[in-house]
Image (tube, rainbow, N blue to C red; front, side):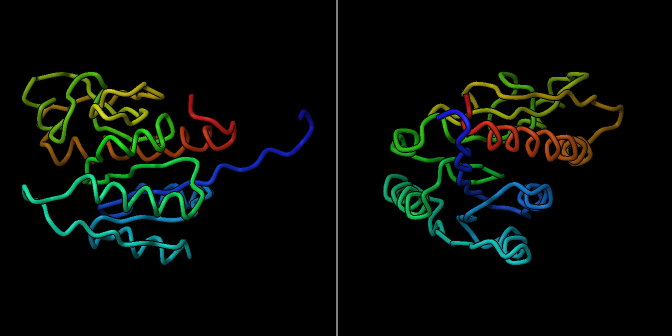
Length: 195
């Protein structure tokens, strides 16, 4: 009803790395109910420092015996246990099985270090340099079963400088990405829906 206060979206961050995106979101007041990790990583310390619950759903295999379906079911169960509305992927290293997108379709956001649809995949910065582009950037998008193919929510360009290495370019992209991703997620939480 008009005039009634909106129920705040409940969010979860899925992380596998240093936790720099998680840290930026928490510093900017993004309300995060739980952080879920697929491996031991720096994001655990970030969650602890901000007093945010953290769950380790460790991926024990990276080989052919990895049961993607069973692992995805574990993550879905954890998200549901925390009544999560919005899933924020922050450098999460595991690709989910289809049931994740059935359970949270249209409510999973991700960031990618290129201007999608260019340079999809895990080596986007390396691929951009190899292609000789003068401009690349970052994209915030809705995650779908097809990797790096969901609707684009926001993009920002980053110029490729002479002498850039994969590391120097990626660091500049990350600086832009943290701000763009945080602002996009804050907008989603404020309005109460993704698209």
